[in-house]
Amino acid sequence: MMPQLAPTPPGWIDAVLGDFDRFLQDHASCEKKAAGMALKMASHYPDKPLLLNAMADLSVEEMSHYREVIRLLTRRGIAPAPDAKDPYIATMNRQVRRGPDFFLLDRLLIAAVVEMRGCERFGLIADALPEGAEQRFFAALNESERRHGELFLDLARQHCDAEAVGPHIDGLVRIEADIIAALPLLPRLH
Ligand SMILES: [Fe+2]
Ligand SMILES: [Fe+2]
Image (cartoon, rainbow, N blue to C red; front, side):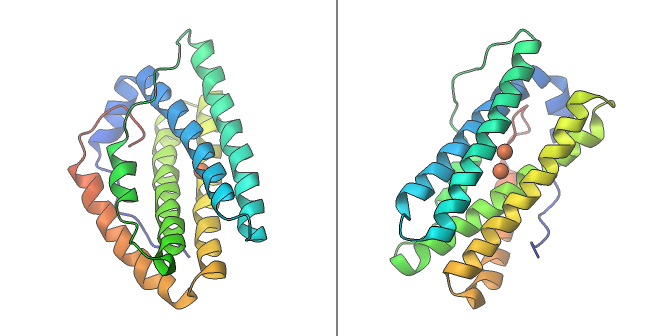
């Protein structure tokens, strides 16, 4: 079971709905980067078949999310924006400890938390949008990101010291809450 994340500040959804086009441009970048992250993991661990296959599948799924967001942008007559820096992801990635014993565990658990934050925020969007194709798309993303969060957690238990997973993810969830609280409320996923 994934621990509960701190709730997103209420002003975030207002910022997103206030400039949904800009949100979608950032969202497209996030899906593309998620696919890239899965491919990077696959490249780093060719000797771990479970992880390798999971990352091969995940990269395809994240690319299909990217394709859907690109279609949404196109339908709205907007071009994607250049990929911007993501201070949330950068700060989360800085939580990876040095040393081979921690490296894989930390990467998997950070990925789990990031997916769960995506899950929570896509759920907020699905709740806020009027019924229709876009609303259903975000409801589906809420489900798939929840599944991805669980996947990374399972991979951590399978490949690392299972006893270390619980305490370490609790610590990351607390750190993530501070990172979220310190970020400005913008029409971006993070
Ligand atoms: Fe995704
Ligand atoms: Fe995901």
